Length: 76
Image 1: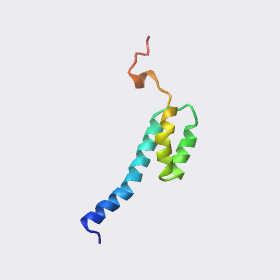
Image 2: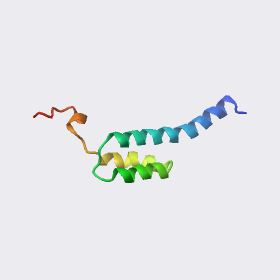
Image 3: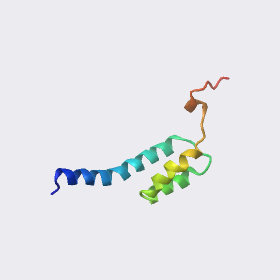
Image 4: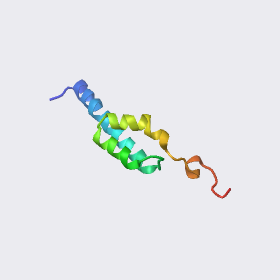
């Protein structure tokens, strides 16, 4: 069906968007945001390749950084 090169190309073309989608969803669910988490979830889910790219370029800048993420001591 596919030769070795064709299979590699298909894997890269199909695998890259899936990896971006999974990474974006996991990152979204693990963090808190200033804006709407639900809106970013919808963007990632309903815009297959563009959604994760937008999230990685724009959405990650909207994270709320806590002391546990920066390694700081919360007792200060």
